[in-house]
Image (cartoon, rainbow, N blue to C red; front, side):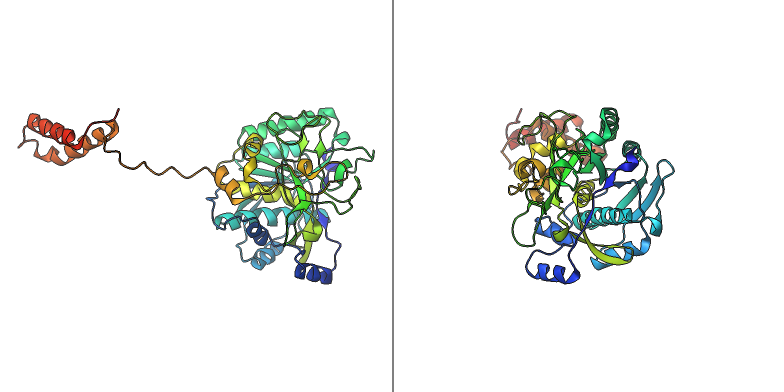
Length: 410
């Protein structure tokens, strides 16, 4: 039943001339490295080593698009491996409209990773008819992250399917793979057909990092993405409160009746979107489909090992985000739909682990460990002379030297 899911990309409706004018006005589309720099993320600052898993329910990619795209931003082409989970495969050039999603996912995730690490990304594409099985497969293969830009409104799933998907994500994150999910592109009701507020799944699952969308101009702060202000069924970021999963204790966002969606955010407005290459053509694409791979690229850059379930850690680092405060998605404010906000270098440094503290200045005291080290060093030097020097004499001289250095700290 997962095949009914929608990919959450949005192609910009602007013409090339409108994009040129928008760029001149500081409101045009981004390249991935330029957005990273605008967030203050430092090029080459992270160790990398994490494998990026990307979940796709359809579409395809071709090597020529990747060659053209990565050459355009001055980066190497990542290593891309296709994995068929259940017989679903990369459809290549015959992938149809969903191929826009596939290109967006690969190009954003790998470009973020390569900007932050200076290393070539390793991307594994999981082709599947089911989100949960693909997520578990990515974890079994040791991926640091798994990005999902497909989903549907909660009412469309049913309680049994939602429970099964959450169970799969528990397995995924328990194995060390952090799962990122797009929060949807149809504002407050997630296009559920009822006109009532609704959030998207799998983003609403407790063990997913829900990724909301901003409109991020090239000058000025990020605001919530909503191209139809006041319309809960318009084009804009999903978000709100789950009707299935409970509000989480680790969430310090506005309290609501269920799990709050989203946790994090990034650029998603197709008018301020990303320049990608698909089908041999350059185009500008956005949607929360761009947010999930963006954050997946960040987390894969943190190190070879995945961090598994990170939501509590993220909400504990609230001060290291830039909050998004302006606007609504027609039903809920930015503080709900964009969660903690957009990343900073301070956040990346904290997630990667603080550098070891420098050693304290000398106190005039020797620790017990230092005494042991001195004894070992002296013994190594005088060992060849054991036949010529009485050990009792050496011991006395060593003790006298230590005493002369000062008292030993406990």
